[in-house]
Image 1 (cartoon, helix red, strand yellow):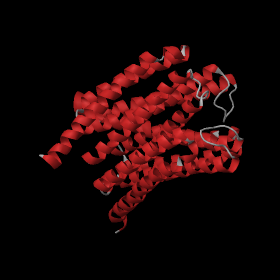
Image 2 (image 1 turned 90 degrees about the vertical axis):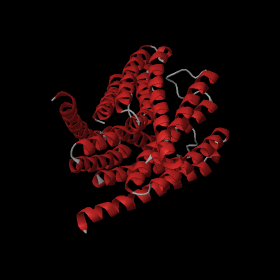
Image 3 (image 1 turned 60 degrees about the horizontal axis):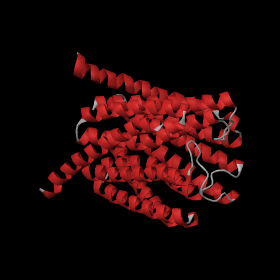
Image 4 (image 1 turned 45 degrees about the vertical axis):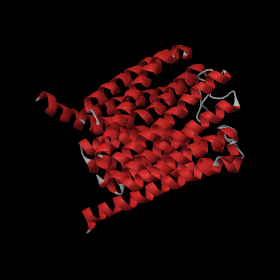
Length: 132
Length: 132
Length: 132
């Protein structure tokens, strides 16, 4: 499970960086807390961070469920794809929000692999434990 | 723990669907990213998703703490109640935000069971390990 | 791991309280759902809760990775520091958002300890398993 844990830490560090950049954009454009609007570049950076959080809430549990009950190395590989997708999403979104779909789709596929892999692994475990 | 993992995946899929519906509402009402206001139906769907995320951040760790240190099947059952509560919350909120309290309360009770069950189970473990 | 689980539950309860206070501020200042603006005290309470959620998404996985692969009692101690930092952050932010940096920094240091500790512990495990 070390590979899954390592990918987890990479995803956390990526999100931590996205979060700190929101603070930098606040300072750069004079958007004072608690405001969350006021300058387009701030708003884009903020939405990238918020959307990444929404994805992490799905990604991290799915990564661990598939990693623990299924294949840890496949889960870790899908996790790396997710992190790369988030970098692509972020740079496209900040440049032009309408171009965010490629990076989003990469992350979406990675999460789908984790959820489907998790359902298969856990479903198989439930079958063996209770029904066979 | 397969039952806890299965309920986790169900909750993630539910949240994934809520998230995709926010994107659909963006398209339907022409609310362009990064805006998060602009049409009441978009705003309600967005707040349902955001509130569900806030609840998941509490729900998932509490589910696993009570499931692992206490009773996995009780935890999984409370988890199913939570998911049902979220569906009720969502359909009421989108129709009329002032009617969101029933679904919220069901989720609130489920989370309270998980936290109280977790505190009891973990507290008992700490007592045995360090104090008895 | 009981100490890590106990700190987890404390952090969840703290966030649960912050979340309920957002609802109280809605009622007190007549900010009707789905609006998230309308009164400064509501907006500050809401941003404290949102920012705490952003931090929890990093904090909880990092706490468990370092606790499980490294030192559970060090992780639990850093976790307590994080929770104290969040209380300081909250009371300062609600009084005056410009004074939020002390509490934020305490939480930031606690999370950094967990991530660096996690990277060291997991990296060491990966080294032993695959490279030595």
